[in-house]
Amino acid sequence: MPQHTLITPVILSGGSGTRLWPLSTRERPKQFLNLLGPLSMFQLTFQRCADDRIFRNPMIVGSSSHEEILQEQIREVGANPSAIILEPCARNTAPAIALAALAAENPSDLLLVMPSDHVIRNVSAFQKAVRESISIAQSRWLVTFGIEPTGPETGYGYIQQGDAIVGSSRSLSAQRFVEKPSLENAEKMLKYGDYSWNAGIFLFRADTYLAAMENHCPEMLDACKSAMAKARTAGEIYHPDPDAFASAPSESIDYAIMERAEKIAVTPVSPGWSDVGSWDSLFDISDKDEDSIVIFGKAEAISSSNVLIHSHDLDVAVFGVENLIIVTHQNRVVILPRGQSQNVKDIAQKLAEKE
Image 1 (tube, rainbow, N blue to C red):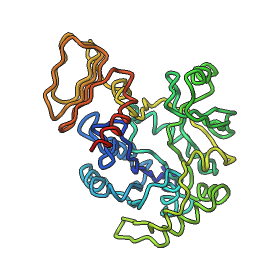
Image 2 (cartoon, rainbow, N blue to C red):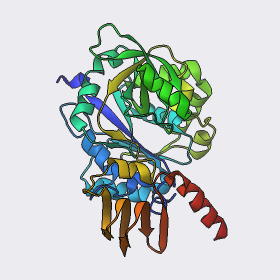
Image 3 (cartoon, one colour):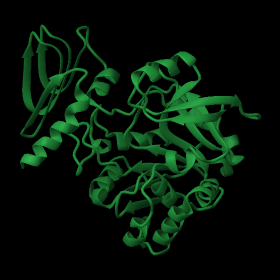
């Protein structure tokens, strides 16, 4: 593949959610957890873009509060980022991506923006979709990757697909972006057949993204430019100026750019994707035995079915139970019915208020 078509991955790792509490915390959010095996989802994201026939060394955008764990996990997999940009505060995805676009080696560099807290089972299918989107991204389209839905999910945003794009083998114009829908609307969109899940994965030229910011959110762009112009640097590590970056409006790329810009494309793909947004979704994507038991760590489930146990600190044994999620971490234990794991965040908040 010619050198000029190589893609620079931009790995976003600044999230700090608690939806997988008690394992995920603000200090160690889910992207840094070894949920599915020896590697964290952050580390698995490097594997997704390790083919040097397609990708350059990645750029990382993360939180300054996670610098130590971020550096540790980069060393563990022997990755060699071209830049590590440490946000002094959280300002959502649009400003985070702007920092990477401003740090790109050349304005025409193609950037593949990926969250680091997702799972993609079929990496080859994902990479094929990326390769087949290069030509339209080079033609200044902002490309998003739409996951072909497998059910009426209410926890994801949706993208409505429009007409095929001339010159592309699989990409379509994006008609509209839909926020997380009600179950009724999700079922309707699934029935229509022209909607895909919004995975928050994008491909575009650095200068295309910055031009869109100039058109639709110039105040944000100015703040990010100032933050990078005044950044402290140490080798490949950038510390954007805290005051300048804090002045950037906190907006997602969907709201700031993708819902407003003109040339938005969607490339449909089925790569075995999950955002692992809850313990229920971890159960759904995990390998199960004949009784639909999923065990991570030290546990036994006897005469039981449809159970997830995640426990590396305590020995857990259950007998005659079904449809449960059991998670332990250090001195904390959470037990709740399957289908109710979205309430974990509320549990964590209530316990934090008592401390």
